[in-house]
Structures are given as structure tokens and as C-alpha cells.
Length: 391
Image (cartoon, rainbow, N blue to C red):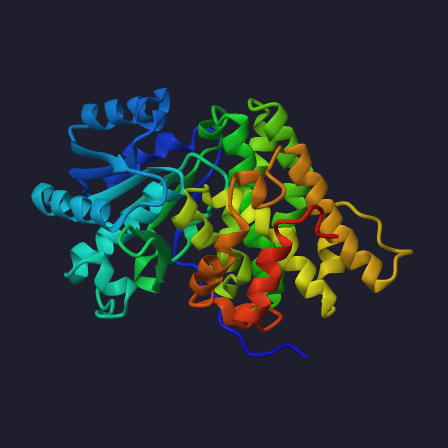
């Protein structure tokens, strides 16, 4: 019997090689004359694709302001700077160009500009979101976060050393332009970290309490695509077939988790990132098999499906063997991508377990985990992540 559920995605998606060429015609058709482009501090803002986009917008007579101060895990201060600039420019629309951080920052900047206050007001529940912002066009340059089709944005509070998410349907991007050609220049380590991030999104959405038949279908397809394409994209960055499949996987995993939600992996990964500066994808990659192993110990039939999606022949395996095989397959993929295996591998000390767990216990989506977890459970999981091989 299928439980009651809701599903929705309001973002229009344009996918394809050289799809970025649609930006100018779309802006012209919508009467957009002034644009704020939000991107990161890294080499992305100097990439040929970004510079070409700027040139095309200028040639079309549009006024363009670039905000390129977004760091990894954007801070509340950065969001505030972006809000001030958006107010000054009086833009008609926002374009987010880059990975998850610029897209998250763009959502937050847009939302705060429309609703007032500061991003901290919304992170800590002092204000509520009642208004939609300007048209937001997202152009992802990585295949990991799926942020181009999600209602969520994560911001770092430097004072409390916390990464906190806010999510609302009014924060959904208006349009996503997904062009796998833009992904070909991703270095292997970024390809690995973002790919594992996408896998984590798909797996957590699949096993989530709020999962439904639509999100299950999306998550399963994403896991299959990642299992058969991530290694190829990692080893051969200009393999556009692999890049295309990873771009699709990231997008549909995003659509899955924006409806089904996430769980304990993200709950633990957020403090690891905020407290120790570990990239979000790597933090997720480290924790994913350990959290799944804790679910396995209580029995979770969906792990068999995950194993099959990752290419494991489970026909002659018992339920426990098939569930273990899913974790083994993820560990093998991590090894092939040079993703650190344990928290110790990224120089985190055992003495930090309590700090990580106290923060993780406050994660708003922790109850969406398929095995309900108290802080004592989190301590067991995080402690296990200092040991080799969660199998």
C-alpha cells in the first residue's frame, strides 16, 4: 500500500550540450535588462564559458553586475554583502553560475532581498518566508548538489561554527540550464567529491521516511547513472557522455531529495564541514557507508535495491548479504575515487565526537532517517567512522 504523499518541482529545466546559449534569448524574451550574476571566488569566474556568457549578455545590451565573493559553504556575511549589492543594482533577475555554493548563496540573497532582515533571521526561525524573489536562473558547473532544482540553501554561521539549511518552495529557482560541456573542466578531485555528494542525495532520498514512489524512481535512476558513469568522468574528464549522465544524475537526485528529504548523513556531514573545513562532498562520502551500516544492523530492505543499482548481482544473496553488498559497493567506489575512508584520514580527532554529535542532533531532517536516531546512536555512528571498512 502506498502512503499519501505530495510531489512537486516548479523549476523549468533546459538540458543539453551548449545549452548555455539559451541564456541570452531567454532573458530577452522575458524583458530582463539588468542582471546580477553570482559566482564563486575560484577559477570558475575566469573560465572561458563564464567570460563568453558575460560577453554575450553585454553584446545583447544588458547591464550586468558580477558578485564573485562566494566561498565554499557561503557565510551569513557573504549573503549579506550579496543582498546589499542586489539592492544597489536593482536587477531584474539573478543568474547563479557555479557549483552548489553560488547557487545556495543566490537563493539566500534573493530570498532575503524579497523578505527583509538577514539570513540569520531565517536560519534561526526569527522570521518566516512569505514572498518570492526575482527570477533566478541557475547554471551548475558541477554534478553534485542538484541545487539548481531544489528549494534548499545552506549557510554557514561563522560565530557558532554551524552550517544551517533553510528550505521553502518560494526559494525554488525559476530556471535551470544544465550544460554538461561546462563540467568537462572539473578536476578529478572535484568530480569525485561532487559525484559522491550526488550519490548521497540519491541514497538518502531513497531510504528516507518521506520517500514516495516518484522520489524512489528518481533516486534509483540517479544511483544507476552514478554507479556506471562517475568513475568514467573521474578518469576521463572530457568524456561528455559520462559528464552528461552525471549531470542528469545530480539533477534528478536533487529533485528526489527536495521532495523526500535527507537524513543522518547530511546531519553529521554539516558539522564536519563547519567545524573542520572538510568539503561537503567529502564529508558526505566519508559518512555515507557508516550511516548505512547502522541502518543495515536494524535491517533495511532498500539496501538490496541500492546494491542492484550499483551493479551488484544480488539474486543468490540473503537479505543481510545484499544489504552488506550495497555498503561494500559504495566503499569500493570511494576507493576508486580516492575519497578518504575515515574521519581520521582527514585529521579529525576522536576527541571531537561529542562536538560533532551535539550539532548533528539538532539537524532538522534527522527524524527523516529510516532508523530513528538519538544522540547515543549518533555517537556510535561517528565513532565507527574512525575505523576502517564499514562492512
